[in-house]
Length: 512
Ligand code: FAD
Image (tube, rainbow, N blue to C red; front, side, top):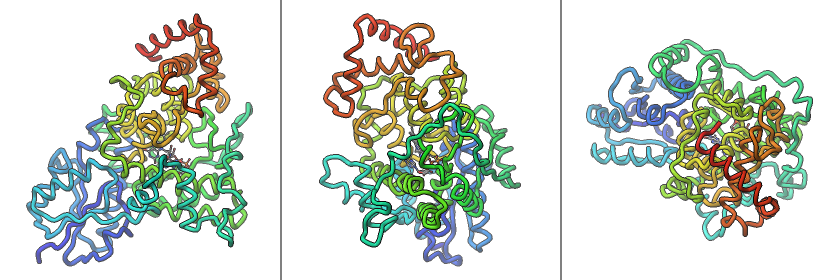
């Protein structure tokens, strides 16, 4: 019997309940998946990121086969082509399906590549809506249309209201407020976080073990390490991680959301993003589990609301931004950065800056760093150095297990680097070393002093912070949210500013 539909499943679409499978007929339809070189080579990807994707894909393949579906799967060793389009084109020719179907991809470039490949092969392509998200791209665009600026808070309230999440019987937000951010900014103080719940760990099974060995051999020159591989790669494992987070870390998630502590990579964060982004978990089940913990009195409202805001708010918001502003968004460079790349320490972790060294150890060990390390250490330092936002994005895509274009780009180029000129955030996240000193213990063991902007011991972040404000003064002088920072800049003596500029130039030429 001729093949009716070939259902293409990308590495970030491992959702067996996707609309793509609604009327799947095992007698006429088949699943198609491929591991391809180009996706992990165009910027050399972190070994753990590659292993996570390939192992999760192989587990999904096996589950589909167990469910009685035919799966055409190309392991990377099969060398059938370097790019996704090459491998797919060959199969379309051989399999001759009447139709190719795929869930809306999470990457603009991949969607275009698919369209072209299907067109060249003369096979009609159906793009099936992605049910994973709360908010469709169309609904986001409708919400956004006519607004002068797109504000997360407004979007979050609208979507939470529409979805009826944490509302009382009058439709008002539970606890009388939409936002408990004021309660969610604690640092750990000088004694540190104390005893933390143990991080969950998923021991690699035989499939993962095989992938780990292959990655170690084939991608030996790539950045990152595999010894710490502990991520779940199946739906069952992902559900266990969610349950572990809800029980052990959610209760303190809110309070310490913005805190850092050098020796503790996870603190009270969930590390659910890779699992959500490859769709082993749905945002609804994460939100529902958290809300249930609050209703049962097992987690306080500030933690649960904070978590809901991240998933139902930020995650949906950045996706809407991506699909509303692409493809021109990726070209944006609002601060007119030159073609500067991330420093070498972002690949090997070798630096004298303790905050960067620790954050990078986390990235190299786990292909992960929590939000504040990403934003207020690695993102901040890159921004102050004048790294091109696109280069920062490319680096981020290569190094994190949770990086998919739709979520990474608005966070890297937009929120972190202000490359979009104020779409995601109304001001750049720029701060001096004093912020890092206040929110973490990094500066205590660092050879640099966050209070100093000049001299040999001056914290590079502090020097570059003043230099950044100085360089962009004209741009931000009328931004009300930056008034305080610009006023402080204007108080600096001319001689100090000269010394700052001089040291900043050296740091930019040779980052420490
Ligand atoms: P938690 O702190 O436990 O938060 C819970 C969940 O909320 C996360 O798992 C995530 O799904 C969601 N979330 C929180 N903040 C955001 C946000 N700003 N945007 C989207 N979702 C959010 N997140 C990614 O999933 N992929 C990325 O490629 C990515 N790139 C980032 C790059 C930079 C420079 C910055 C500053 C942030 C980036 N984020 C990205 C957002 C956020 O940092 C991560 O989602 C979070 O650190 C993941 O760790 P966690 O699961 O422990 O998060």
